Image 1 (cartoon, rainbow, N blue to C red):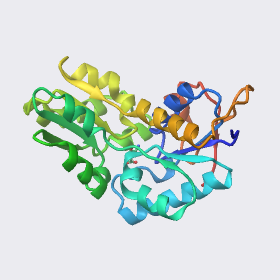
Image 2 (tube, helix red, strand yellow):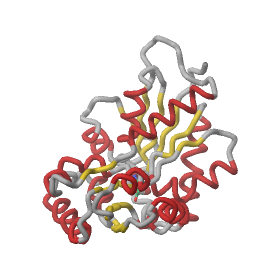
Image 3 (cartoon, helix red, strand yellow):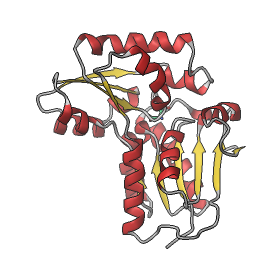
Image 4 (cartoon, rainbow, N blue to C red):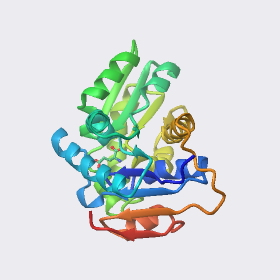
Amino acid sequence: MSNKPIGIFDSGVGGTSIFKEIHMLLPKENCIYLADSKNAPYGNKSEKEIQELCIKNTELLLSKGCKLIVVACNTATTNAITYLRENYNSSFIGIEPAIKPAALSTKTKAIGILATKGTLSSQLFHKTSDIYANGVKVIEQIGEGIVPLIESGKLYSEEMKNLLELYLKPMLDKNIDYLVLGCTHYPYLIPVLTELLPKKVKIIDSGLAVAKQTKAILLKSNLLNNETKVPSIKLYSNGNLEVLNSILKHQFKTEYLDF
Ligand code: DGL
């Protein structure tokens, strides 16, 4: 049993899609969330730069006593989680594009993956893709510009809709029936994506799977929090707090922190 917080970080506000799943599944857990919006997007940075940012976020969360760290960012996971696991004495849970369930369920034998350049060019992504894509066409698309739009509060803008239309077209031309969201910012686009996609295309987002994995690891390590008092939830951003607040629909208290 441990009442220490779960630490969660992302390049910005997107990882709150994971935080919300964790909070829903594990409502007694204290949580600290870091939105590194000042350095977003991570997707166009080099592996080394991404690793350096992940080190900074990890050390801050560890200095705040976190018992486990959730890397709530596909780009950070695919470029840095191996390094983090090798260099820190803490458990890390990451998120990668969910190719496996899409590849196993597709009937048209074509699936689409929307993710950042950093994720799609990583070794870890290619490894996973090679294992599971077996006989299935995987149409990869870099979501260039999506994260910056979300980070500047333009989630439901005309600009966003146009970008998404452009990115979905090659996938729809190849008759995909699954779209894998390979970036934790993208679940916030589901209302727009649903409007743009034909009904037969299912959207796969792995937020709940990450929350379940977090629970399983805490249970296995005997680190779940059994205290009954209201948990402490701290959400920090080093960018525009208004963007974080609006994505969270003002449901949680947030704070500016320069990190
Ligand atoms: N949420 C991050 C991810 O899952 C966004 C990466 C970025 O900042 O470009 O990949």
